[in-house]
Image (cartoon, rainbow, N blue to C red; front, side):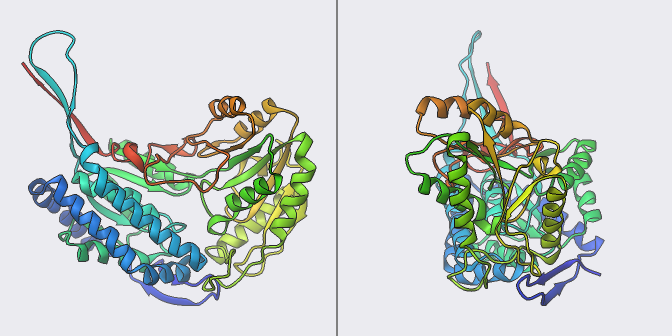
Length: 455
């Protein structure tokens, strides 16, 4: 039986199921990608491949309504946010189409001794495996596939089991843009089959965005077979508020940073660490603002908060909140699940001994902490196994730099939220993963940095 199915989380309806590929089809997919790399990739130029990716960007824009409606059905993203995700994916493809030629230019090295020249030349590695999550079905693929196809790598892609329709739509776009068969191959593969793909000698690297558990499993298999891995895993990002001239503005930023994508974003702000002198005022305003936001129909343009991605996800979040309260946390607001819909929720008094202090809450649940001073705020922020993103709000420029330098995370945003960009590298440290995607660094992960030294 296949696990690939579109199950509308807002209604519980199973819209359509898709069969898992056979082992023979799996081998055919890898062979097709390998052939495309050995032939099409070697015969085409960077500019030619960039032109194809530019067309991929255009097709995302042309089909934005259709693409957005698919992921509303698949994982409950409110329609306006779904449209925004499609637009962002188009921007990412466009960015790489415009800049990859510069990223791939030869890099001369000044010799310390001897005659001649030395240069680093970047080239493709071969077939890459992408294992993508359900929370951003188009954006996640764009930041992996965009640069790597221009580099000349070819891709076999396993999307999340609940995103088979968007997975097929993405593959269709690549073919319609003019990419040959095998350049980008969608696979409805099982987890056991993914282990087979990683082990295959024709596959040169793996990029996974997902849970810690999935990342550890993929990294273990890849390590045994000496394959390059990029992992973007979970996060419990701190939002540190030390001072502000506009408390209402800071509260709105906090709300926006927590509720994007129904709260199901790896780099959403999840722990709000507030200076003692403004803690009570912030908590009151933050809770009131969250309480104004009600769950609603994700197909409506007026909806800010739709269902979680599945009933299972909502049930898991419900268990986390109850466990946090059992261990001493105070439920200030929310917490009453209805099917896959989960209301905005605020927890306080989360001690370091509470399991909640070390967990990722993937949904509209906010933990609010009181910090006596800057040092304690940084300590609370870093007292977590994760290290993906972080947010710092302060009116003191020197303090902003000190705190940014002290936070153990791959990204720090100061006095701004929802500021990701195609040009900005994305990734974390600690249990949040390894490697980077997007920007120049994202285009430098799966390349052969070949030294050519001429005497």
